[in-house]
Structures are given as structure tokens and as C-alpha cells.
Image (cartoon, rainbow, N blue to C red; front, side, top):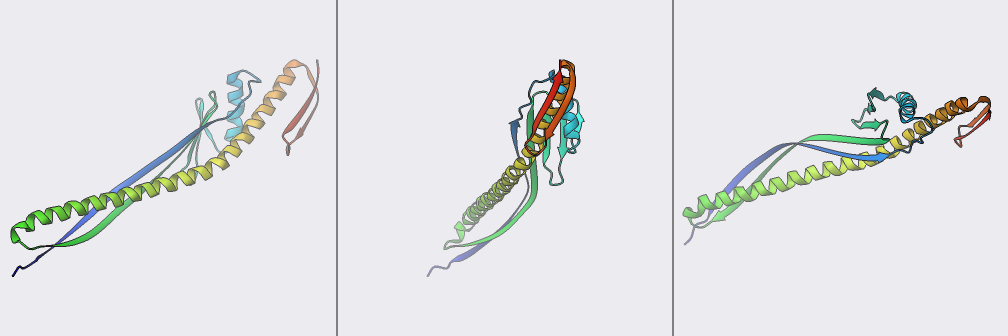
Length: 188
């Protein structure tokens, strides 16, 4: 009569997971004035939105950790977001063998299977976190894009006013902030 031997193994996996995602987009800054002056005007508008200037870059980090960087001369907007999590998984697995000589090999095989299972679960948790970051980034990008587009429009309006002043005497300026239209009458 055979006797079965029960094997029980336990494994714990601890991993610190960090995921990061980013996207880059372009803003269209019209060349009304020289590039350097257009960058200055855009930087002034972005400062009103909480950006800090660092050379040719304007940066802002929001409360949720979203980092927004605008390259003032190239007109690129980079939005990055990162998240971290500590993953701790613990599992147990049992098996049986009928020969005591097979016990050590069966225990090693159970541990290997258990470790592989824990690794897959940790990878799945990391992927879930990455998807959460991507979704949050996509929502944030829409808000940021609208704010930056408004700043670009205001910088363009300021540039048009400067250019008009260079051409002659400004007689009248009328702005419609709702539609974004600007009319400048200049006497040359």
C-alpha cells in the first residue's frame, strides 16, 4: 500500500514598482516677430499659468505629479506622469508525492511554479498601474492643451500689437475675448 507525502510551500514577493508615461505635442506659434521675442511673449503668458522659466524651457509640476515642460523656441509641449507602488504578494501551494525520494524534487518544482505565478501577478499589477497612469495622463493632457492654446493665442495677440506699433501709429484696437478675434487699425 502506497503512502502519499504532502508538500506545502510558501513564497512571498515584494517589489517596488515605478511606471512613467509621457506624451509630446506641438503648439503652433506664428512667426509674427523674431523667434526669441515670440518665446519671451509665450513665457510671460505661461508664467501667469504657474510655469517657471528655465532658459528656453518653461516648467510646471501640478499637485498630482504631472510635469509639463514647454520648449519656448521649438514649440513642443511634453507632459509626463509617474506613479509608484509597493507590491507584496504571498501565496501557498500544496502537492503530494507517493515516493519519499521524489519529495525534494517536487518541492523545488512547486516553489518554481509558485515564484513564476507571483512574478506574473506582480507584472499584471505593474501593467494595471501603467494603464492608470496613461488614462490619467490623457485626461490631464486635454486640460493642459486648452490652457496652453489660450496662452499661445494671447502671446500671438501681444505680438500682433507690437508688430502693428512697428508699422505705424495704432488708431484702434478691438478684442473679442470670447471668439479670440483681434482687430487693429494702424495709420502708416
